Length: 249
Image 1 (tube, rainbow, N blue to C red):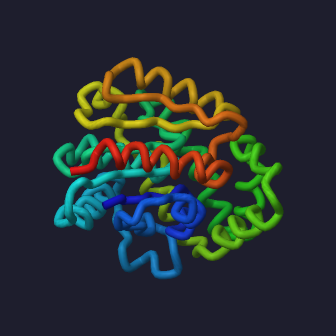
Image 2 (image 1 turned 135 degrees about the vertical axis):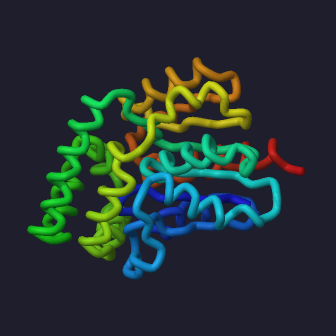
């Protein structure tokens, strides 16, 4: 069973192209992260650790092998699952993953940044926020994508509720995530950290983390940026298949 966790402003449907490229018939769970979807209040939690525990309860009774894949915000929640519930999963693929901020100064700066985004969501509304979000340098490489892919992604983002996304930032934002960096050294299942070659910051993070644990590998996908899930779904599907084959029981 695969647990697939989307990124901020994404949705379960964000995995569609990966699923289409995959040759696996293994079951997949694709829950919406807290704050996402029209009915976000139904599953809302009030802490990062609460989201980790909510998702852990979803998969605890499923059959093994249990495999985990997350992108960006979803990869950070996935790391929380690996650290907090090391008994649950047999392998993981984490795409564009940040391990958490190590000091209070960095945490305070990020909290201020996200507070501005929350204000924009609540005061200016979802369309204004999405337009600003799409202009972030982190996503500049997506401009080469076909118009259809860009428009589908934008429609997914606009399908959310502004208050829900504000809640998501307040609960799952990087400033609210525990610093899991030191715990990576003790992760005892195979972990592949995927990044795009044009996403230098996260590629450097992945390379440094891979040095901490022989179970952790860094894999770089050439010619794409942060959102490998969108820009290179076949590469993600291929890596997931390789991980799945190794984890067969």
